[in-house]
Image (tube, rainbow, N blue to C red; front, side):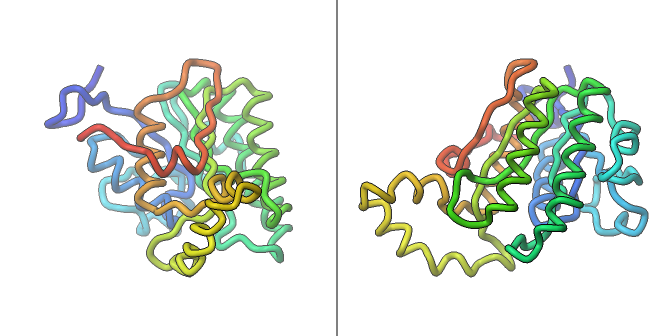
Length: 231
């Protein structure tokens, strides 16, 4: 077992990240590197320079299962973050051509290579809006379960952080909903989480995978409570 420098109790994880240059991906890659993990990122040729320093680029296509599989090793944790940026009702076609196709590729590759774990950022569900987006993410979860891949399914609703602050204006409404019995469950399931909380959740998922062959769900309350050991 390898240990992270300066932290003998932390085993080093070999991680392959798709979507590593995105909003969540770049922050996660930096945190994994800070904790001493070995991080490779599946990127297109033109995106090499967008990666955080220290990540190893692997040129490939996240929409193609063979390409993803060629970048994987059996001991890897595959962290799937590919998705349509700023999802909205008008982007249904992109959800199906990017979000769905990419998770299909990752699941097939993870199953064929036999990776240690697949970490998938899904979405909180059920919800009264964004039905097409939720449907695609739910189909991604179903593919993972059908393949029997060891996986962590992370279900945020909206991740607030740099460039993504507008939902903060809704916090008073969430606070009111917490006190209304008929709205409390939805307010908790569809609550806001911070980028820092998401990164902590993903790091914890990578470092402590579920039992082999099982899938666990991490919902909004658990994302908010996420903590990782000092690294």
